[in-house]
Amino acid sequence: MKSLRIIFILIVTLLLVIFSVQNAEPTCIAFLGFEAELSKSILMLLCVAVGSIFTMLAFLPGLIRKKKKQPETTSEPPTAND
Image 1: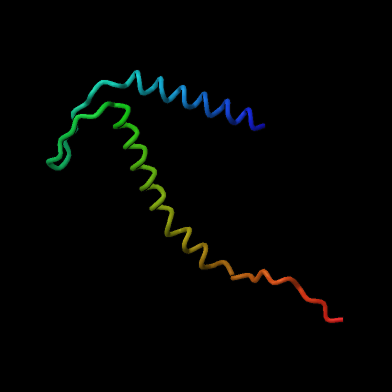
Image 2: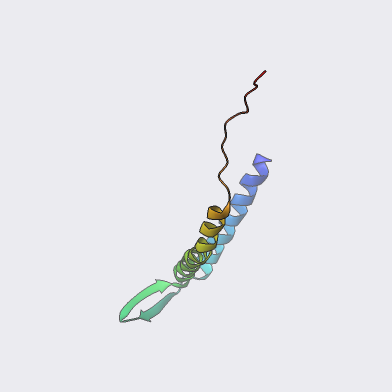
């Protein structure tokens, strides 16, 4: 099972390297007066990271509400009163 995980990680890494090599051309970016020249692969990685952060922030209020609604449980073991 552990060897399958390592093989999967190696395949994903190889695909990411191939993607980065094929998208290495620089691209000019201008946003709110900020200008930069980045490779397409770095730009896509930044977009995925920012999108992931926004997605987590969007789900955060629902998770907090769900956690507040759950009753608190104690982890004390039951005692025998014989």
